[in-house]
Length: 71
Image 1: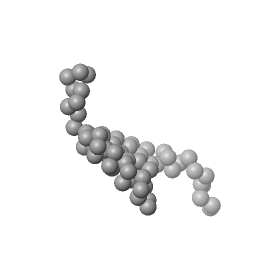
Image 2: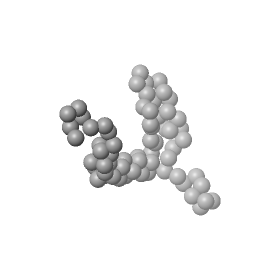
Image 3: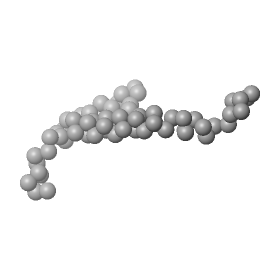
Image 4: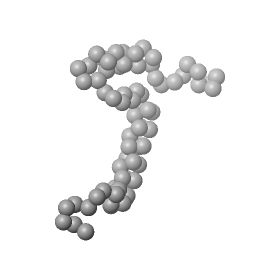
């Protein structure tokens, strides 16, 4: 850890500005990801979740009551 200390790509002052901007926004985000690394990780996770949702779509939908008139 000591060799990375102070060498992170994130700028705390810019992060604070981004947080203030988001909080003062008329429609603040429910999820705010800061920095390139964080955004890349979050987008990768979201892509994996979308793929899993698509793979299991029929199983997910099969948990509902059948539509009226359907068997």
